[in-house]
Length: 279
Ligand code: X90
Image (cartoon, rainbow, N blue to C red; front, side, top):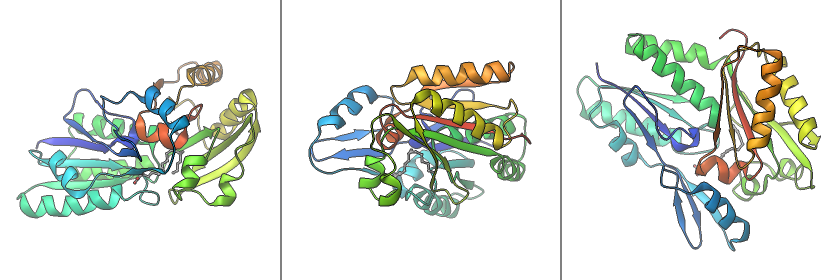
């Protein structure tokens, strides 16, 4: 049974050790240029370009044939996508899965709609890898990830919702919450896989305090934490320090967000995927 993990690049996981893995890039498109969210992208330079770029900017998700290319050669594939409520990535993966199973006898492809993005997708990928390496069957891995997903969450802090609003990914009413200097919108991925604002925080310290409270109120009890940030290492480290003070044995990683999350979450954002109490 040859297993392969595939994820769209909104997971920020472009390379993954110990198991066959492929990242399928989303693209960030301006009137001048197209940025492919892969290991060649200079994220800091893209974020800088976007500050001054004129005209429309947007993104595009992988298409069916790009997913098919990523599956090639594998017998058992698990695909993790960004929430189907904000992107066509999941729909493309589902169509590719059906085509792949039809044309490759004995092959199985299961698409996991993360109903989230970013660091929560990393948690799901790590869980899949763990179960596959433990020797679970395709069906066991599928059932196990379904359970695992019920107990993972994504919280994030955004300093601007401009790109989300311009591209119709949040309502104008939600977008209006941000925009005042020093205000951070603390939000979560809702059960339906949409952006749900929770708090308006004045200043970074207040945001971090509220973030830790929100994690604990969602059952966080020292499980895994995966943090990404867009040019805001300071806050990511500060969050890590606060969590370590309360949960000394916690397993935390910090990474920069890649292209897609950096475009939508924007400069200064922090995104946190974590396990609730049952994991
Ligand atoms: O072009 C495409 O198909 C991609 C569209 C992606 C739109 C949303 C990206 C959100 C990135 C922003 C904060 C977290 C929101 C989480 C909501 C579930 C990150």
